[in-house]
Image (tube, rainbow, N blue to C red; front, side, top):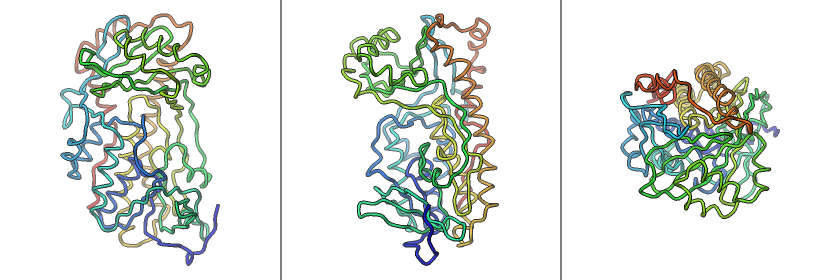
Length: 410
């Protein structure tokens, strides 16, 4: 923790956003669009990192439509998905169906780096926006008990950047959250995920779906020319799995998806496989004087449902709606204002995490038990899922969530 006086703030701006992910760049764009001078700090030199969340749901598409960015977004390389299923017991069972929902009846799979580059390019159109790459915020600056800025590691060395408000959007491993010493509620997760790519051939299935068998589960995301595969392993089991020969993973993939028999040869080493440590947690308080946390920095989400990007974007929209006026006027952003952001976004976060935890505990964990019998879908549920109206229920919760945010900043 670094203490500083107001006079030592360097290049102070009303708002400093730590983290150039979906929450940080969307908030930076909306605030700059509303006339606020805002600086975004991103520790990497670009956005090119594999296996980040790539699922853009209808709730985010609606935000893009409201801001006039939807047409440009649809110009990015993407694949539209209007239904999801699970392959179990030798048959593909439709589970989730977006068709018929309004105003958007699909979600989009789009490389996250393309989405982030789009937001950054649009934000740069406004004179008050500044994006600093290779700037890693490592600590908070304090003045008279309030956050007054951040200490930053840059290519030119350590710097201190002042700000009237710091917004941490630096992900589930947030250094700012640690520096602020905010209490975290850990909910645990029974699984981790191994991510990898496999070639996709024209004769392969078109769907995006999960494959479930006795003791194993894998999700295949159709990315047109390749499959983005998520292979689920019991919590803490990834390291032990990696100590085995890579053929162990290849064999399991072939057993789950026989049509990928030839493609698994590309998995020639564990270097081609990334591990995602699944965590579900939530801050008890998302703010301190002069500091606000949103997105994964405030609440780490499970990959169940692929809602991470979309919840982060909803947080950013709500924060912009509440913060733009005091920031543009140069007023001090008090605790009550910051509390309003948490109060607005806490209910949907709690609900979605509760659903994710139940899915993890009651479905995924049981599937991954070594003694698990071949899973099957109960006859009554299978009969209900024949109706599209039933399949739309999880689609609406997953795609639109609750308490949808509308862009109200000018």
